[in-house]
Length: 193
Image 1 (cartoon, one colour):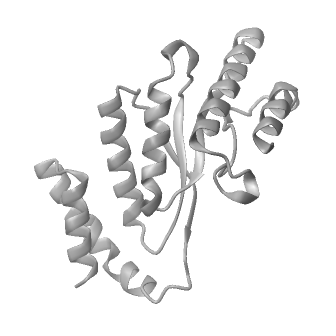
Image 2 (cartoon, helix red, strand yellow):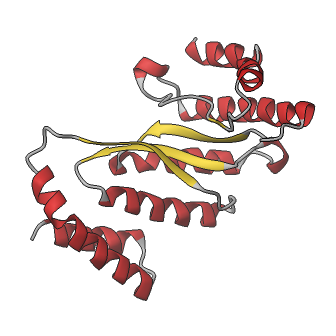
């Protein structure tokens, strides 16, 4: 039911209204953490359908108004710690099956809540491997929410080792062009020192 609500809301064109009200609005995401129950509990199929529908609306608005600052569309802003990347990859796989003429991808976005920032880097590396594999365009990636789980006793140890881990993984990645699995192995080694 909330899926239909998302579509109806966006078809009533609040995007157009707010763009006229505030012309410097540029980035449009179709939804916020739509897989989470407070925001709809949508399936990946519903998210892709919503993404394609609202992307079409954004494309039409840009054409209709020829904005000085055109709207850019992307997302889909899932709540994803690295342990949930499989759902992100499923979204990308289903999006890749949509006809190019029917999909708008100006950027990708996701949220990360974790005990270590290294997961963002791993997420982006795995994302880049996946879009290349699927033939999706390489576009900017926005991590538009980032937070720590402070209730974890691991946080101080992770933050202490973070700079060493980043240097080690960056060096490893630039020299050997590793797979995500190899990076995860080195992450495990570094964070268990």
